[in-house]
Amino acid sequence: MNTVSTSATPLFDAFHSRSSTVAEGGLFELLLTGLGCLIPVSVSLYLSTQKPLFAFGSVQFIHADLVLLMVVALVGGRALLAGFHPFRKILFLPILLLLISTLLSAVFAADQLRAAAAVVQVVEFAVFTWCFSLLTSTKSFLRIIHFTLAWFAFESLVATVQFLAGDPWPSGTFLVHQEYAMFTGFSAAIAFGLLSAEISRRRRVTYFLLLVVLLWGTLLGQERAPWLAFILGCAAVVYYSGKQRKRLVVAFGVTVVAGVTFVAAVPQLRDMTLSRLAEAETDSTRSNTLLSRLALWQAAGKLFLDHPILGIGPKNFLSLSPHILSKDELAGEEALDPHNIWIGILAEQGILGFATYIYFSVAVLTVGIRTLRNSLGSRLPSLCLAYTAYHFFWLAMSYHFFQKGEGHIHFLLIGLMLGQQRHWTTTIATENIAQLPLK
Image 1 (cartoon, helix red, strand yellow):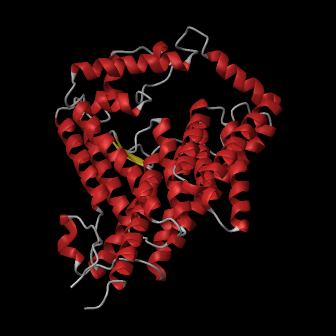
Image 2 (image 1 turned 30 degrees about the vertical axis):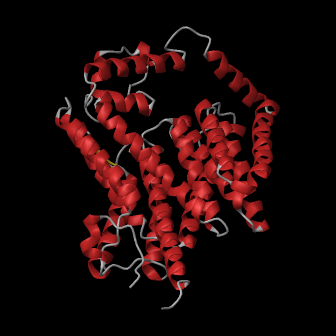
Image 3 (image 1 turned 45 degrees about the vertical axis):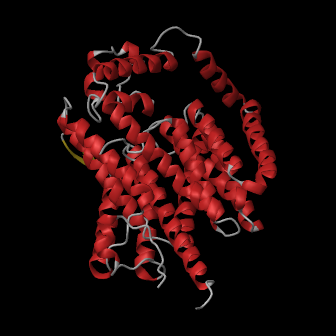
């Protein structure tokens, strides 16, 4: 007798026989989708003050953590009644190995409370991913993505009002313009991904307008890195778009030219951009952020050489960097991290953590790319391309997947794409079985 493979991990095999493989329709899907829409709002609320709701020492709980607790309660309650849905192998093994390497590094950390917080965070986001992988409905995925884009388009409009009022660093409701520019930047990359494979003319116009608003908002943020990351994210969409590649090369080129034109045509934007470029010519780490980044990287490199196998411990760079760098070398700011995940993870978790993090990052991208290649001709490609654009954006930004705030959105999207992949592979397997000749 033929059966449909669900790629369940051994950990959940015992529950799989009584689990419901889909969560489409009904009150449960509506509630889980609504909680997914709350994630970008709760992250923005936190970043408007950058203060946690409450904390125990170095362990902080932010607004998005409350949403996470509601998600876990909702999905956990359902699991007790309907059974536990499987955690797909494509991501389960990478995240398990990353957890093990984080645990080993934490054992020998100088600041073990911060290290323990990192371990809890890996578990927290793994559970978060598993919860949202239950949503296999394309409609739910789109509702969450559309709400996210609309929310950050609103942030762009707020920043526009601030810009017109004379604010030199518009940032929407965010406390700092750097965070604002990153969030509007990844939203613009997602909008380009959705636009690239959309067939409906009405939706294409909507995605185009969102792209323009979000791209304009990103330029207002006056940050170099999000703009470059947007270019890489869109380039990935073009590369993986298959037969549409030639058309998208033109669309991509027009988008970049439009961005440059925005900057050149608006005097205030042009002057701010030129001043940011001129900053690279100064020789003071206090006024040149590029030099301060080099100082951070050198400090991280020194810590890695001192602890090459397991590193100094997750989240421990903040605790140890003040002993190596002065405030002047950090441009007067606190060294929360080395501002480069690859150098930072070498310092904090050594070669072992670095290898498992690369494995995990590749798996995250593979979730979308593999689904994209297997679903040509369906409605899934636009979702896969949006997912791919997002994660290439963040790889270019070189920020940690497990960072508070940003991490909640990372793992929300990863969970949603896992749900899409699970539903798609199950559907294909079922169709193949139906086509087998009867004996």
